[in-house]
Length: 429
Ligand code: SAJ
Image (cartoon, rainbow, N blue to C red; front, side, top):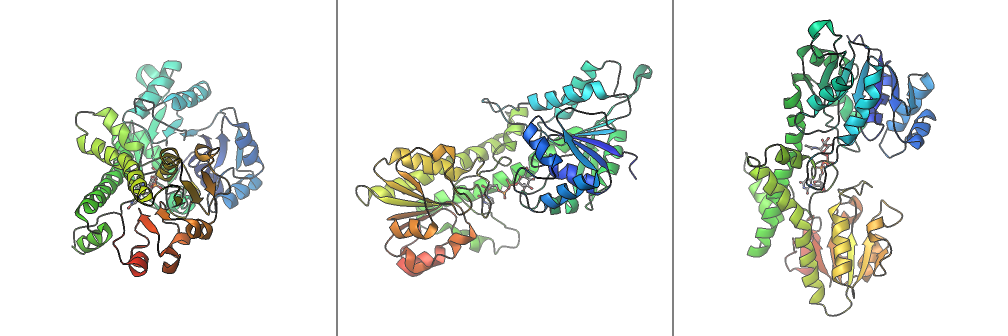
């Protein structure tokens, strides 16, 4: 049972706001803190400023019960949960400036015995950096009570929820809790037990930081393997989808799916934090990142070859801009880079972009007179070359007859059977 009944959540984004809402609907008094006044105002009206299923109901309920409110100023609380961005800099080292800004807000409020939790995905030792930063601002406090100074408890509890399933996975996923001290870990475990029905596993702070990074790197390395197989298969003139399907019949083989590259704000970012922490030792992790980052260029080259073989002014349909299937999230999406590169490299081509989850083109594609957002049916009907970049359900139901006589570059393998049926030649992977 936790003794904490007032929590300040710093950063009301994709992770902070769901965490604030789930704590509040479970009876904890939560004050959400954000630098963005519009976000604060939206939350105080019981609204959510971004799309996440079921979050709206939780926020509206918590605000109307009086358990959740938002502010731009960090208040006094018994626990602080820091859920701010940790982007990487140009040299791919982590930018901890948002964590430091949160620390500057927390430090003046501390009296002793508070729990400070870092939830943001962070490089190894970021929790210790947060602790050192706060204790440098407040030398009257301590980690261990040395000299009779009041103690502050620090822990790292990384989020592991999948966008689109956040309100379910917050409750059902197992949770890793890493304390700088074992007392900090125990306090954090009791707090997460308020809403988490999964197992809560205790470790130290650095292992917890690495666990989160390793989960996403594991995925990145395995996707890189699939992407490398797709390029090798193309060279050998075989179908990578069939190859993977057959190999996965082995009881101990489970190869992931190739695609146009890896997008999103997690898997394409987090492995670099490991590489930055141990550059000489992280050879496989770095190479996997490079393999995945090079896949979009390879796709562009495939499309360029197909378009050039058709002569001048080809019409190219690119299907999908999101970073993965059935969402509207465009962050770090390889599909955007591929579409922009095609517009640059093939100025005489007309690019017909179909993305059923958005209403206007993103900034990277606006203002190009050879790029047009249109419906899936229209893009395919007009095109000489059709490029599948995202495996949205809407694209999977395109009838094989609509693809006849077109060059198909299916980076997600959704039309393998349709194309074979419609055209007989092997699909480009
Ligand atoms: N992808 C492939 N082939 C595959 C699987 C994925 O090319 O076989 C691509 C997707 O198309 C997408 C990218 O990888 O571009 C990432 O998609 P994803 O669904 O694998 O993961 P994310 O980025 O939405 O969420 C991940 C999750 N981490 C893991 O599954 C280990 C999630 O649990 C984390 O909470 C999240 O990162 C995060 O916030 O770190």
